[in-house]
Image (tube, helix red, strand yellow):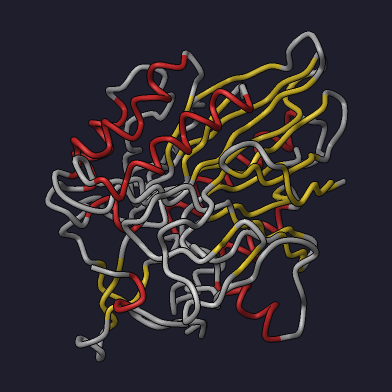
Length: 360
């Protein structure tokens, strides 16, 4: 199932539209529990040098036994060796074919063998090739080093988790992982599928954590970053309003859900999330500030099983270049103890650094 044949350029936010979840991939209901799950998946601290480095992979689209996937595996190995991160986050579309769980085990094996803690925010393709979302997530969680917790009761999806980074004075940064799921069927439009959206129970779960961190920080929101796979409608809104990326490649329109559940508004209301980091759109790897929040794409980390037109010198139009030979990579985030902002850059397969951007 190629993403461009599934939905091309769906960027309209449909407020208040009713939707029926496609539950073949996830049997978890969207019902906010009386007591929100307060568990923390990973509690990290700054090292002796006062820095902490997070490596993001996205859209590896791996297929076990398929030679087109070889570059994805080499890319992951190269980045782990070159960056030497303190934490790795994969923002989904880990796999792109059968056998899906075997494929996930192979592409995540370098992470499991590295001794570095890591986590996954599942993508839409991760439950489209035979296994349920729960079974895929359970298999991923079984690998050494994975810090993801089991799915939360009453919270939609599987890969919703919280990670904290603390300095001498307590928690300085929070990293939220959301499961942006797969697809929904809209009532009255049964012939149309659209990408899924972050549900009410996930937002309530986030708010409970955010309120607690703010309260424990003397009423001041703790600077946070949200990681998930499918971008939000507000990114399309920003581009339509003429806002341009401050760095990076903008090779295709965003493909968010047609439904807007208000997550961006909640981030702004809580005042803690400073960046939204996604994947999904393979020809984009930019940073775009909008509404006080940085929209950030990871760098496509896959091989040649799926489209990608980010070459070594930037975006190459699809009518002049095909997928083989494009340059995969990763995105890196670096935090400094006592500072509320972060640095981020793209690292290409082979080591070249692009887009050194600082957020204050």
